[in-house]
Image (cartoon, rainbow, N blue to C red):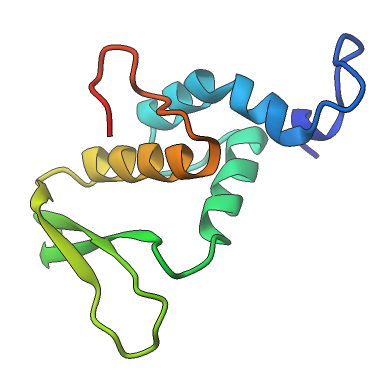
Length: 123
């Protein structure tokens, strides 16, 4: 069970789990940024699971152009057999940087807020 499932005493009536998650965006992004690959706290795992369960159409993915060396940002169409739409302007030579970027895109899609916008540029 995550902290999100047990509201603290000061939480206003009617405040949803997502309200509390949105309020912790920069904190969760900082945790993810520190270690984008590997084990995460239960709260961050909760968020990542929701990212993974998102509808396929429009989902951001990473496409390996050169295995283990270079990735490009892609978007799924949601149609079986359709190729991934790649954004040729967004290439990464670090899988960690690529994962951080996708996290920010998915967070922004989910909440409307860029969790890394405090000095790291917007997505």
